[in-house]
Length: 569
Image (cartoon, rainbow, N blue to C red; front, side):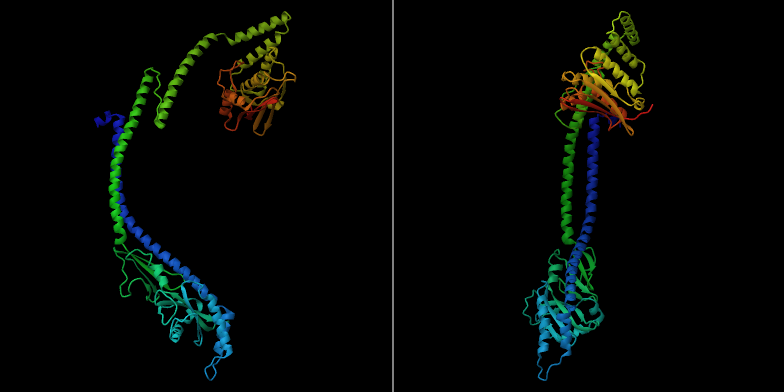
């Protein structure tokens, strides 16, 4: 503990960082390895569920199409229902010959079935039975249609009348149709007349290989898939029927999902060894690389933190030198990170302290120069005005009175905010002084309603702006036109807008921007307070959205707009 207390910040940071890295890294790695085993099991379940849902969705789509196709056939009045009814009402002649009406109705049925043949790639045959067992088919799949008809008649009539019923796979006999297997699966639905009586049956034959492609070809090696009906009879299986379907265990993941349109269920069994074994091998390999990366990260972290703490130590030594009175900035850093920003800030602070110390010394010197009492100056100006009147020096009286008025206005009120009336009075006194100086020739027009002159504004904000009008607007203005300064004010709800406008030479945008960036004390006018100082005071007092703005057109005018809040006395 004593060692830790006396250790440097470099030792503490590096030691704690390495300890946390190693402990956290190893703990997380072991936890990750354990959770990965659980996740692998969840992955298998999700995979089995996904396979089952994909197969279920695909077959449901096909079965739904088949249902609509059967519906289209069984509800066709002209090509199916009427010909079947007509055929069942006919009788063969004595020689067993078919008469022309029979052949005509047969042709209607066959022509319609031919248009449906090939409509879906997985339908390898279409067949119609009349209620008396007359068959009509697009391809010969069975030699004995009577057995098929008998099996259909043994099925539940209500189920056949209300929906499509899937039959068990049937072996094909004597067909010229090319099939990948020797089995087809029939889908059958009853044909009803207008009185909802069964007058026949429509069958669509699925190619059995469709199930092989859909439920077996895309499964992982060793997987078992089967489809069973409501009686637990196997409709399809990708393994020999004699082989028992796996039971849920650590070796298999089982997923079961029923179909929507038929009374079938799909069952998929995925072997865990073929998938989890590979995952476990990859997990062990990954764990090895993680540990190796943690070790490399520890070395890299040691080197990185050593460099960072070394720079912090240098910054600390520089601060200690400043505390001892040595205002020497650090060398400029070559990096661009947070420590480099701290070094820049430290250097700026050193330069600022040096500047403030120099400024403080200069201000102390100026204070020594300004030890004259301002009230004494005011009294002296009053004496000068009285002597000028007595000696009839009338040209001295206005400037002396204006200067005295301006000085007393500043001295008599030390509040931050004053009535707009007093602020305008200061501006009038300043402009009177400038007119008496002989340097300018201009007119002044102040149009401010009396009810607004009692509102409070920040003290000494108009005079610097009016001074800008004289110095920038009239210094190079056209002397052939009357020069005029206009001050107006209006109230807009809770806002007060004051505008100072001159018809001088105008300003460029660059000159306007220069007013807002000019440092205090650089002016040689009355106050040395610039536009930037006025703007800063306005923003601090009224907040965002308020302040001072300029607009100008060179050769025509310049207008300064004060946007202020209404402040009542």
